[in-house]
Length: 143
Image 1 (cartoon, helix red, strand yellow):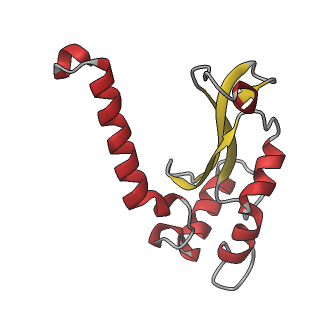
Image 2 (tube, rainbow, N blue to C red):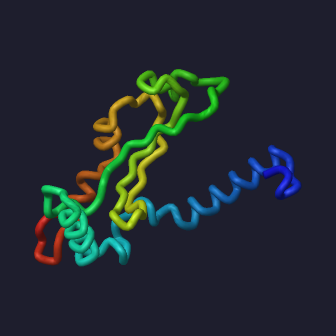
C-alpha cells in the first residue's frame, strides 16, 4: 500500500485507525442492536425458512453465532491479558451473529484473548437475552 498511496507505514496506520474510529462512532450501533429493518420478524422468518430448506433440522434458526480469535502483535505490557493459551497467540476475541445473507446482525467485542471459551463470551455479551426479547415471529413464537 505504501507504493500505491505514496504514504509511509505510520501514516497508513494512522489513516486506517481514523477511518475505523469514524466508522465505529457513526455506524457501530448497527452492529449492536436488533432494531433494524432487515431484522424485522418477517425477514427473520424468511431467513429461518431458507436455512431449514437447506437441510437444518430446526425451523426457527435464522442465523449463526461464531466466536472468532484475531491474533495481534505481542504487546509490551499486559501480555497475559491478551494471550490465548488455546490458540497460543496474543489475540482479541469477537462474537458475531451472521445471517444467511452474509451480513453480521450482531457483534460483541473485543474481549481479551485469555477468555478461552465461547460460552463465557456468550454469557458476557447478553446475546441470549437480546434474542429472546427481539427475535420472535409476528405471532410471538421464538426464533
